[in-house]
Length: 116
Length: 113
Image (tube, rainbow over all chains, first blue to last red; front, side, top):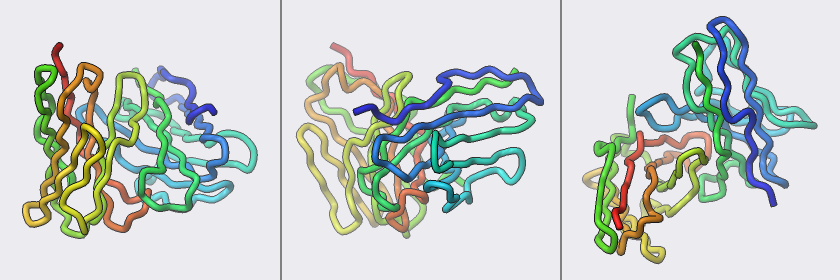
């Protein structure tokens, strides 16, 4: 029973390029959450998606960031025209339940983005 | 604004002794609190939780204490083991929903053999 998969695990981009981060939730989970962890800080909620729907994107920066969770395939977090400040660890989590906070959120290993 | 604070970035204890990790919060509307454990190169994994109607929750070697009046919670690990060495994140939720969890910056625990 594979856990939450994220790829790539490490991603290096130059300023102005695009970064695409992928997340495959656990089998049977249809709810995906993206978090960002800046150096020396905790995880910050970015966006909550269900299949083909963005439910809550209140934590997403207004520009350059977008997320999707198509009917087929992984969830994608896309960052356009990356800047150095985007360098962080991006974690994806999935849950089988609609939105309750109990211990049912499972995290992936993260993608570490470095912008040169 | 940092609504959940873990003021100690690191903690070192001897194997067999008690580890106490602390967490403070500012939002009095938080009503559910969780601790996550994170090993290097892995994602956080859920450890233990407590709702605001309780002041203590115990699971084996792990106990979480909640002091609502002080807006403070702590995680006690006793006895500490070298395998407990990890970063511990405190998290809190106001609505009970996954999408409003707020995390602290983490405390790196090192348990020395």
